[in-house]
Image 1 (tube, rainbow, N blue to C red):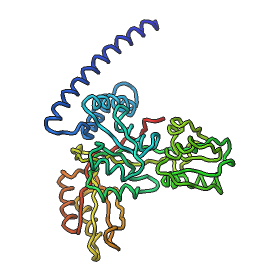
Image 2 (image 1 turned 30 degrees about the vertical axis):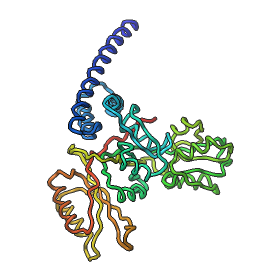
Image 3 (image 1 turned 45 degrees about the vertical axis):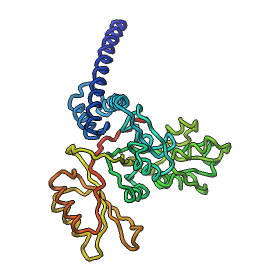
Image 4 (image 1 turned 135 degrees about the vertical axis):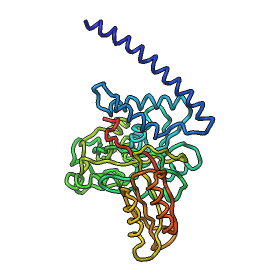
Length: 362
């Protein structure tokens, strides 16, 4: 009986491979047309349409995110066959930003690690890479200032977003917590685990690193046994550093939102987010007037942050996210009002909202 089922599976696999070859052939033909009109190889709006369609036709009994993971790799392979597409991320390998890249783009595309935020923006600006991926906001710690500052400096669009659940771990060659003297950590990771660290590692010293995976990499190259790093379990696997304590984040529903930056502009999907930056005149009620225009347009404001404008003392730049796409009438009206009332204004991008909460990493 088992042999009969296995023969049936073999037959099904042959059909799947034939259909996959047919799908990839269609993708190649689409790539030819894209090159003629200069359309981007990767389109987050089209990706959104495919995932929404899969949810409606999913009769497999598998959770939707599992089906999406399968199709992500199929689409990743299709883009790879269509043409070269380089993705930059905050490295080294094993960082949460690296995981976000794979969650969005799959494993088939060329991924290039960078040491800091500005290097990624600069590489996109100069077309050395097609897209860059950076963290923009954490659910417990708020906005990532380094990304926001770079967005203000470079004329680059936000093309897509990625939501990733974040699970922090303590990685170390030490066998006991009491043996640890120094912890390597990115400042965001430290902020998200501060309660656990304070309770379990009193008196240790901390050394800041450019990313979580950088700290794990440093341990792998060190002969010291009294050092630890806060990072992902996959980073531990990559650099052969064991995990001593799992899930040490202070808030268990801990998510980071990442952005994909590039020169392209995303098309409307109906479930979009628009990001804006502007300065305000020094007059009473200036911010109130902006917020009032958003309210009267019936828009949902999902985020508002302010940053000092480095070019002008005591002037602040405001960053806001609101639901909707820049082509929507109500969003257009709000943008027009905001732009008319502010000394400087810039639309950073409109892009599909990522509603997926499941990571491709275990």
